[in-house]
Image 1 (tube, each protein chain N blue to C red):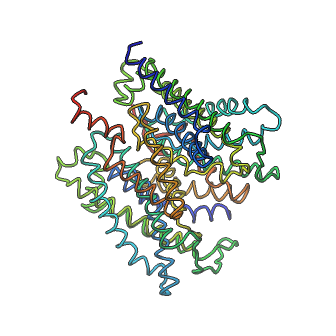
Image 2 (image 1 turned 180 degrees about the vertical axis):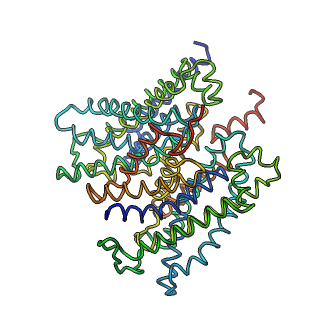
Image 3 (image 1 turned 60 degrees about the vertical axis):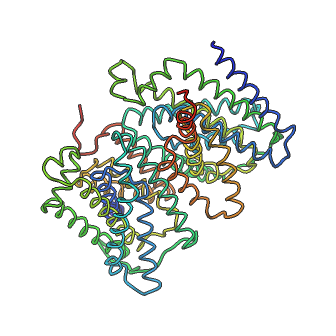
Length: 288
Length: 307
């Protein structure tokens, strides 16, 4: 029970991070490997607000999310759109975007190391325990989970029931056909990329409440988000959430029962199973 | 063989001899630099053999390399040293085949992601096994000198070039070029695309593991965190792409300047190496898409006349 609930709490936060990446990959078609660095930047911002200004990280989100939105929008417009324009095929765009975002990822790590140093960052926010089913959990994990659920739910509602959300989903299904029904693919892609970045930075601020971060830890989160997306299926919100919870529980189980140093190995085992048996994702349909 | 090929062979042999004689005329400092360059040249050239034609970006180099160093670490006391790179190459090839069988049936993104975390995953498992058995790191104390490591690497490099030349002429190389251009066409031509890719991916796997085995004595002390450092994979990718993967001699054209630059940066501003790596990646994507080889070809087309 303890493993299940801890895993669920962790999985909720993972789901939010993976949703951000899924928006960027599913709609904007950018395999953003600098995603984890955006997360770490969000976490650093929350840390900085809390230690320097005594600002509650939850309140800090009001600043962090819009800033991340603008930064990611500019990144897409300036750095990535030229690649989309020049790409001859989906495959060529994939290679270019992977290399470009690797470059950004390293550049961000370099800048963050320079600005914040190479040390570890954590802070004590709501570290008191709370009782659920007669085991105790840290309050900050519960708060992070609830916020992740609220934000993820709002995102889902927005994508499902608004006109802009419909546009994004149209681009996600078929970027070539979307302009035929009057969707501005460029604008929609930029919006999705910016939104994905904002969601990821939010996830980073939430993660920083209970994880110790350092400048170079981003790539681990990128890995996990990627594994979740592949497990859940590209562009599939429901699959992403289920996959994130599975990953959260699997990681917690391995950390508790075998060794805390094996969390990535646990994620890899899941990844391997998915690749071998369901490469189209948990809920995806097999393609001809 | 055409006269052109004979000419190229003679040039290659002369350059190889020049490289092999470095320990004779070079200072110890340049021998150390030469060993590093030879290591990256072998790694980047073998990387480009697979990733050049297929456009699959492999980040598994560090994993294979680490496996190789551990083969030496575990076996150098009981086995003759010359056998270790061979064993490592065998294990590397098998590991590459397994990774390839799982991921290369699918699209390129899965492969990149899988290899991205592979070194870290292997490191976690090795650390865990070591914790279970109570070992920490290992000392590799041998009588192998820097000079001998260098010669082994140059020999392996010559082998890799020969292999690359042979693959380029073979049916496998032709099949891979078709796959790289259009996988659907390749399938329609009756090429077993997955098999061809897996077979070729075994080459960099085996070579990287052999390089790891050869270099282990240089480290003296081996522990998982240094043996499986993921940075190595990225350095290899960047050097190969900087040089250009279109020609066999491309990667080494990236290795030499980048190793020198890296050396300068690590000495002047050790904290900025990652920033340099990031900028190099961005430069390749935005300014030099074909690497130095692409630039060379463009210049020749513009000023040389000969296509």
